[in-house]
Length: 637
Image: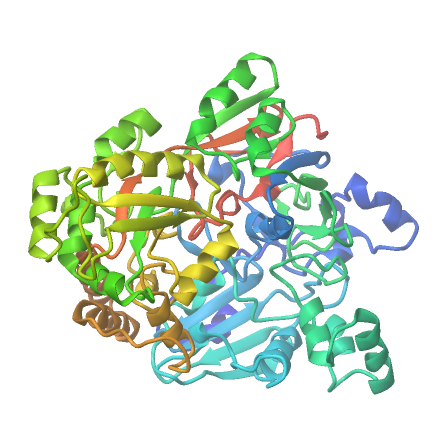
């Protein structure tokens, strides 16, 4: 195959290793042995792709594992069973631990000048149901889902549009898919590697039974009535939930499959008998047979971890939980607590809403002197000392040291504790009148009471805001904190009802030249400082508002420059200017970065790195470190 592709090489070609393993070298798992013996499953040699992905554990400094056992972990919301897709991290192409992109589900990929991408599938690969995984699954998604007006009214996702144009997609044979654009789409492959991947394929055989173009009309109508939905499209979308992972009948390519129908307090996931990865001894991954994910109250995660009820836990734990976790270690709960670094650009960030509905507050927040003053009035060192024992890094929101774009001057920009300068900037902004208690008046005569809304999930955020409340009062601003449910908070921000909100910084604090800077430009309403600008971009101008401030417009231009760039030097230049604009304009007020993330690991669980980075994207939390390679030393959980 490589000889055939060589004449086409104008950019990087990445192919997976091509080992050939004879049947006797493959080892059948005890978990599925009875199913194989009874004839319900074919033997492992027939379940694996013709060319499985062979994992080189020695190169990672890891041990060969033992199949077996049940891993216990916790989440705090029923919909977070989707974390199994995040942690499983089976992607068409994914990052290794050095953030290099490698084929995973794909046998290989060919990138020609970021315009034409040839995706090569593994011959003989199967879904968890045993159905073949072929280019027809990509064709079904592209033609029958993404471009179907009833299933996808808005059309294919934005990452596939380059300068408003969709790609030409072709399927030359059952193991080849080609995406081609007239202009470069440099983030295409990297988008496929995200923590929440776009899933440009679907299990066609399964979903066709719910699609009007394929299903028997009478049977489909019965299914619609039975499911109590309005149409076949609603039925199809209900069952087509690759990321939500709550349809136990939907075939998957992830290492574990959902074995728990309906909503439960405890969900079980069992090993995928057709999973495409093996170790070099011929042992099919994942090593662990079963994952049990319990849904618990957020306040119980640390306590239950302390009691030894989790084999692997980081979600729901924060820096403040480290003392109780250390105590559990000493009390014999049979686990250890690793401290991983955080991949978020800021552990805590405050987002003034430049699109708030209140016209007075909107005008105030759009004055850069006010945003700078709010930042200068925060005693970050006191917060670091009080909440993080000086283990975090105070400063403005910018990328982390591990990124090639890190500049210490950007972390220091408008981040010194300088109440005197903050007062002067607020006076210059016309907020120089105060009441008898020193609180400033707004231009319309109201007191300057700034409501900061939070998701109510992290005590450290509320604690930090208590400290900031005293700091801001000293410069004449009364901070009012309002904890809400996460979904309610976001909806209020999106609708313009929220003055300011507190959340993490950018998810990706580790960008490289290949990383799209799209999240630095007003392209997404999830960036809480400009929800309506982001909505305008996401809807093609059908909703929201266009950016009407020059620095934000420049961010959009630079994002387009990055998209059109042909060299890493040009992409890096766009990144650096965008970061400087954010540092100067203080669109989000970073507080501290790099606070350690506690990770509880059973003493019997192996191959979990002691030092690592807890990052959503890139990284998929545990996903980057391949939980399918984790194992229990005795094969039992």
